[in-house]
Image (tube, rainbow, N blue to C red; front, side, top):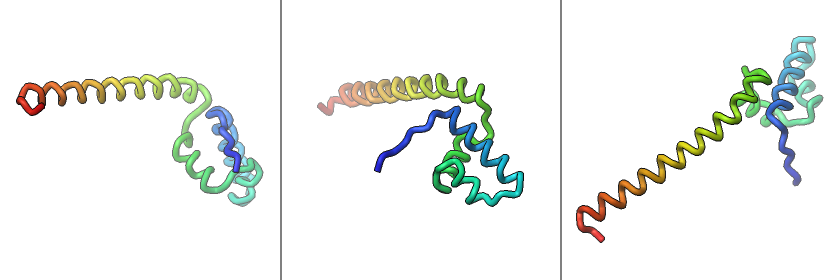
Length: 92
């Protein structure tokens, strides 16, 4: 089965449209079907992007990239530290 990847801005727009339909007395399941995703996908999106606006999404992407780079740097430094500690203790 082919997986679609939705852009973050599109996800926020779809979640807003679901909220609008639900506020107009539509059932939640019908509102979800109107954006062509499953309820599980909708719940995952709501957990991740629920309270965000489009401009906040644009700020989020570079922060996630920077966070990933920093995590990789920390793991590399930790590994180097463990290697040096083991070499200093004579267990090689």
